[in-house]
Image 1 (cartoon, helix red, strand yellow):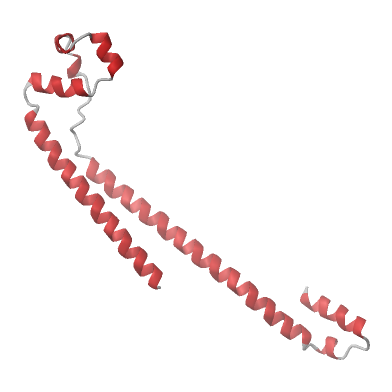
Image 2: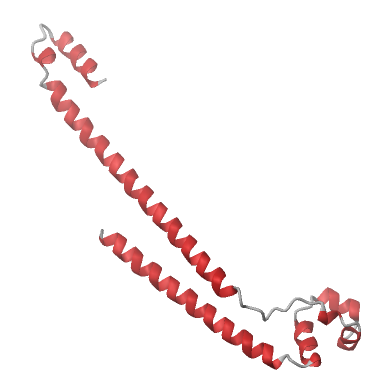
Length: 149
């Protein structure tokens, strides 16, 4: 139970960090989108995300700006769905950790019962009437082995 409490506290902390980070990203995204309202600024921002190979194809920023390819570039500042994605991933992580915890707990219960059942079975078989009333040592061993199966 104490381990479950610690795991819960850790998960709540991770969730808080993820949510606060996503809020910062969305605030930064709105600030950046206000800055890039002018076409030249938007083109310069898009130019930063163009790969170096594509930059070689254009030759210069002026060619890139004239071709209006910057208008077709995806807006990397749009983070509106990012908060929802972070929340969903946080819930998925919690579910996975919970399933792992339940699996480890049930595995522990099964393995601990095997050892207890084995020792209990040895006691009952050694005290069974067939073993105690056997005529020879060989017959007692046979009865004990049959009881253990």
